[in-house]
Image (tube, rainbow, N blue to C red; front, side, top):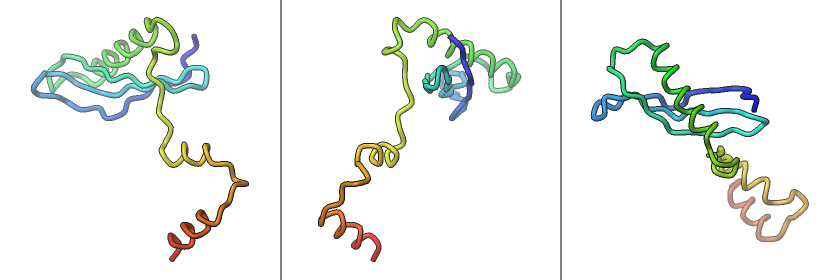
Length: 104
């Protein structure tokens, strides 16, 4: 298991729990996996402590998933998914009408 990249998204402080929360993204073998994690810490905690705590927790969840299917994969962008499902060569009269209506 070679982790190519680890990143944080939506890092925020939850005062109700006295914890930092984040969506940690792990890139491994071309796949991106996302894990929502939290770490109990005061608001004035050092950045390095917070980053290490959040990343360690996400890595622990990632490594201990029973199998690859249980890991959380990044969902494709809605427009990106739609473009992948519709072959470029298909064009109908309805598509032409909708395209013309959108262009107008």
